[in-house]
Amino acid sequence: MKNPSSLFLIGCLAAVSPCLSGEDLHAQTSTTEEQPHSDHVYQGYLDYFEQVYQVMSDNYYIDLDRADYDRFIETFNSKIYQQLQSEGKSSDYVRWRSAAFLIDFLKEDDDIFSAFYPPKPAKEYEETVLGKKVDIGIQGEKLPLGFRVSFVEPRSDAYKNGLRVNDLIVQIDQQPVQDFTQQQIVELLTSFEDSRVVLDYFDGRTREKKSMTVVSQEYFKQTVFDVPIPVDGIYCLQIDRFNRKTADDMFRHLAFMRQQGEIKGLIIDLRGNPGGPPLAAREISSFFLPPGDEFAYFQKKNQPKALLDVPTIPEEYHYTGPMAILIDHGSGSASELFSGILQRRQRAVLIGENSAGQVFLKSMFHLDDESMVLLVTARGHHPDGKVFSFDGLVPDRIVSENEWDDILKYATSYLLYVNKQPS
Image (cartoon, rainbow, N blue to C red):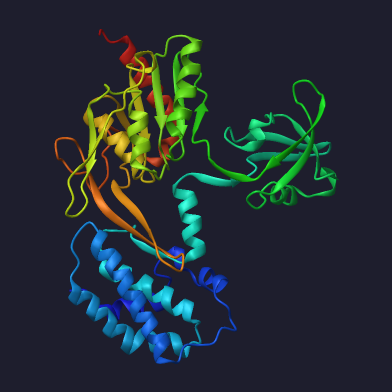
């Protein structure tokens, strides 16, 4: 049986969740706000907790025990409410902090994901997990003559307007770049949504001076990057996160590889990849698995299976050669889903360390005050019904972290070995 008193005492010593640190909460609540004393305010807390409980009861991947919720309310009445009041906390703080305790109390012990997010962290989390970004999409370095562009997000407004790597920005909104520090330039290029910024720059290819007006807007970040391998025909792609445009990025890289000649082996580096939407894993599987095959399924409480199949793409874009996928303890969610399916289908060899064990369907539920409840709503299954383990994926070839300097060489050697074997 869960012990709400113990939970509260632990929570008073440290933040229950990194999304609910004291700084996060104080940043959103006024220090001058009138403290709650009335029965009306108190009842508002209870109504809010009931709403959070109902969201969790309706959507969490296993059934909840209403008696656990009642015990939490008893602890709120006898300890949590009194202590937070005595500390002079705002009503927002009391509501959000207590809701976080409630989620932590009701969820399963091995569930490290379900959590409560106040409005500002909720927005930041959603942008991160969906792989979206709101800015101009430019990175670079300040040099004596200007700001040299080192990367431009392919789906940003700056890229659409023609800005490219090695272009030299000399003025931002008619102010010389030399007047700013590196940090000030970064801040100017990370403006609020819909802000317009005028850039004067020298084209790195033609040396021609140009000007453009770019808009800070929401876009999906690039997630797939080429890692040079000094062996002809062997390629490596690093995927740092999955989003709904990962398949587009993958297609662009595979198309370029095919233009260079035969692809003899492909390494996909998913180390440190925390995942993303399961549909993104499904979409990139289309390059490596037969179209129409069952990919995986999730099953929410009291609902039928949500089957994912392999999308159909033109045959010429399929890659059927040998593959190695690199994973580690930071590889979770959709990156594990993709890796585990390809491993079980014997389509790829996994190299590295055990993955995170996080193949869940996680869903966001927004409340009226713009806070959010994040819940595990289903576990992932292979097409034959085998559930993805909480212990993560076990690599076919274990390479520990202290050997990571050689892991690309190891993977390359494996692919070269496979190429030498008779078909």
